[in-house]
Length: 199
Image 1 (tube, rainbow, N blue to C red):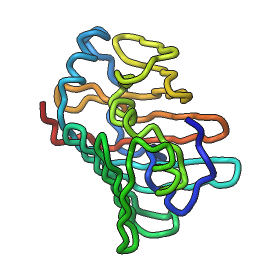
Image 2 (tube, rainbow, N blue to C red; image 1 turned 90 degrees about the horizontal axis):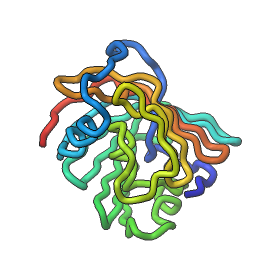
Image 3 (cartoon, one colour; image 1 turned 90 degrees about the vertical axis):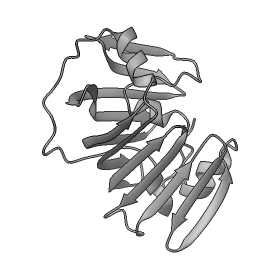
Image 4 (spheres, rainbow, N blue to C red; image 1 turned 135 degrees about the vertical axis):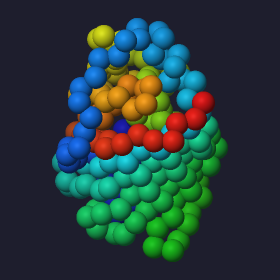
């Protein structure tokens, strides 16, 4: 999926910078099959962190709060990205973007939804899987590297996702630092904390 030039709604994406307070690198005792099964059973979680994005034209960063409940995603972005706080809500059908007191609704199945709302074409339905360290089960995987039961690199939907570090949060080993690249656009996500797991 091709990313276009970041607009003021750049906030919606994904992914982060600032690495104080990260849990130490963790090697899971589970093999890849068991770990994938464990994470796919999760129906909900929250995390907080930072997102940084670099394109040919811009370099931006924002604080991120992510809440997942089943197929419902809620993302809140704030900080120095320039245009105030942005709230994004999505499910398998609708995308809602709220900013500066205005809310817009889009059909998530439309390729123009992300571009119209945030200036990006984003794999919105894949992101909740990628952030857990999983490929999306809904689309083909072009390549993946697994070491010690942990996903280290993933190629899917035209993106390359690289997992740099993991941490232990309750019984789950989850990403704390990852990079995403699509064409000339690069994003970095640093997750400070994972909480409120449900399955």
